[in-house]
Length: 163
Image 1 (cartoon, rainbow, N blue to C red):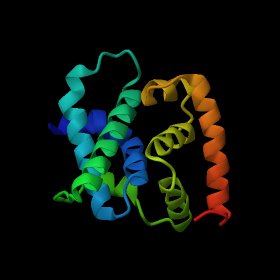
Image 2: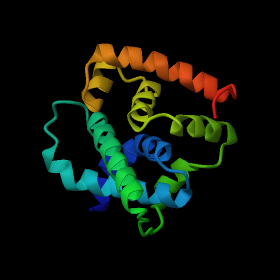
Image 3: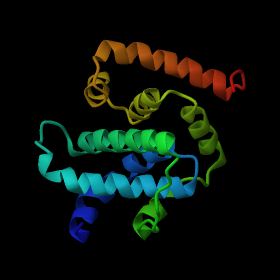
Image 4: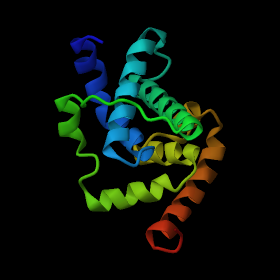
């Protein structure tokens, strides 16, 4: 991966990648592994980007797919991935596990189903129901109902009513 591609195409979307990777990992080590794999897959699939959506939407879709795939592999094989350090620019933007109230929110999000995690992250990024539906692979009406249910569940989790 060239430094220019990373700097111009991935770093502007680092916050997206960080949020998604964080929602699917429980440790800094796993987070770093997922982040690196997402960046690698974005680079590998860059030629497949057909500009039918925004670049950030493409990054969301790849990030979600990579995280879901890694999560399934890990569950199936109890496999752990080797980790090098993240690039300094990503670490500076990330501070992924430092804020306690944010940690509580991510803990609550991690209690959702794998798909619901992606839906709520996209909703929190203020993506439209149609954009979320396109990324997740469903219809916009389904997304509206799903978001209402997710918000109710998160409220219960955060209020301590569900473990």
